[in-house]
Image 1 (cartoon, helix red, strand yellow):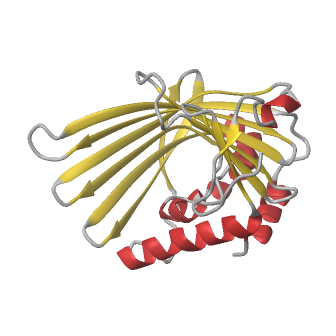
Image 2 (cartoon, one colour; image 1 turned 135 degrees about the horizontal axis):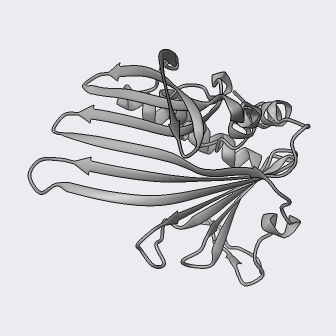
Length: 244
């Protein structure tokens, strides 16, 4: 899919009935590879959506000034993306043409690895229900196997939050959309995931990821959230000098 078409699809899928939206998730990942090969990371992901624009902030907890702390600002109306790297106070502006190349490169990597999905896994209801953080949720599961890697996925969806599903679709990172083909299509969700558990088994190890919805609400978002901070400088692209 061409980038401009992809971004237009995000605009069309966004819900005009919703006001500005702020969603906060936490992601806990535990990786185990043999004796002593275990590590754990904890990340907070905040997504802010205002009309055709959305901003995603990633913050690694427990690591001050982590190079992984960054924000991505997407304007689907004009197809531009800005990535803010907070540890260095620099930003990278991505044009639609450059984004096209990044998506193509990402697809090529998965193709060479033999892990590019032919079809996306489909969630199926188990009939189980429970309450998570005051939300009534229904359990859905799916599995995917490719080569020697197996994913078992459990999604607990809150139907009461179904009106926010278009916001989740809109907030998909265009480059990450290729990798997300390994997972169910959020456009098909019967509600917002309050908890997701992804158990990935591969040769010699396991990666267990849990994503929890901490909050989702309609609240005013300032236009300043989508501007580049004045004290950030543009990062020079490889082989290209940046004019100040």
